[in-house]
Length: 626
Image 1 (cartoon, rainbow, N blue to C red):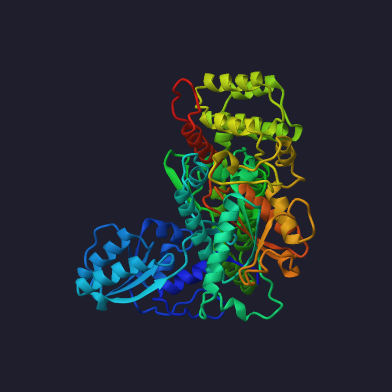
Image 2: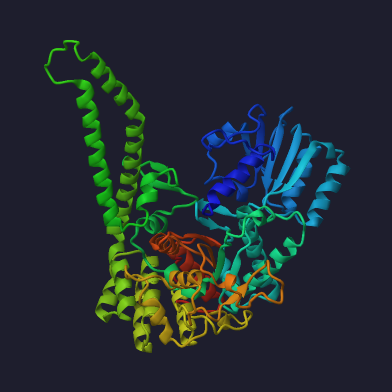
């Protein structure tokens, strides 16, 4: 069975809500309950609220006996004779709050669940605090849940590590800060693997953050596998036919342009323009108020059409609406009889049957109408933004710039002086800078002047220009020559600048793949390939001496992959990898994860922070980017 991260994480959360008792699934494989009669209170922190939000709805909480739920840092009144399920990160602040709650006897019993493994010092603080306040008998159990990641779809997750790209590329960052970030990423990835109960073969380009994460994760898995009852023993019981997945780790600098470009497909467009967060979206309604929508696996239209270009989505909404109207007419025709016809009672059974069918089809028709209305609202909001900011022109021009390796100066200036927000213009300017192989200083100056005329802060542009002037590739698929992470310049993939256009020309043309997708395809296929032959190979289950060698099982082919992007990912890459998986015969399975999911604007803001840290940017003070 294919790895389904959303399902696995949901099962773990449901077990936790049922006081960590195994949940009995009813016939039909639905979500069952173990303790329906036990009413309980759920306490969580903000991070764990984000973990729960895309997976468990309020009605699901009630189904599992949760009657009240609160944030851990809010003042709460005692509720007697009721157990409390805590789901929080293992932090000093949370431990102090738990000790305070137990000492005040807020609840009958405390079931403590930490989102990742609680460090020994914090566990000792919890124990001593409970002993000193004479409340240790109230703590029923303490569990490490290994759930410190946010799952948005069956095959999409984020570690919700904010500003990771800035922290890893900060010129002033010392070894200690870098190690802390790498440790945090490894901890999150370990949680994902523990939830899936798989120990993958790890592949990554040599050097830089990806190798640091891969090496530390390899060591963490090795140490954990030495324990007899480890989190992966269950996975070890498979027969020899069970094939392990491959985990491919990349760094954002591997392909920078994808994080910046304007995209015209439905899912990335909704995320980038309307601000999809944790599968929720707020859109202005027709009468001025805000409407909130959920876009997840329960929405069939979103799942089926998320990868289509926006105009195709508009046509599909129209098609679905016409089909709905036709079905409603059919129901009315069958139940209403012919106008003016006398009812003679001879076809009573037939009429009753039609009436029953109509009644049964009503819920389904209502649901379909709600979905159509929802996406009509979203498409209308998108269309407004597209017209106001000429987003279709930006996507088209960026695509042409990358395919041709340049753009006519007059066209460039007309875009920079035309419609669009300051951020749109800045993103377009950076894409031009990345895509064009040889730029004269006068051409770069011309772009900077145009940006300043629009009062755009050019810090991010200057940062990318600085990188490019150091002759370092931003969008190349070949990243073998990497060196020391501490020197900021060498953190980017070193190659001649001609590789920029080579890696970037095919990014938006529909019949080509992103460099990331092409590389993952090659890694899963496992055939000799000069682009990936230099990649590191780590097998945490193999003896240390043989890891990294060319054993046949390490090279593939692989049916399942987990692809992880350090420094910020997006729906463009997720969609591209899913297209790859579904295009294979038989279909493969790819899970995509990242340190955080960013819109193009959010990522450029991180580039701007780095530019300012290096003392680059507009000479005159520009207002913040809108």
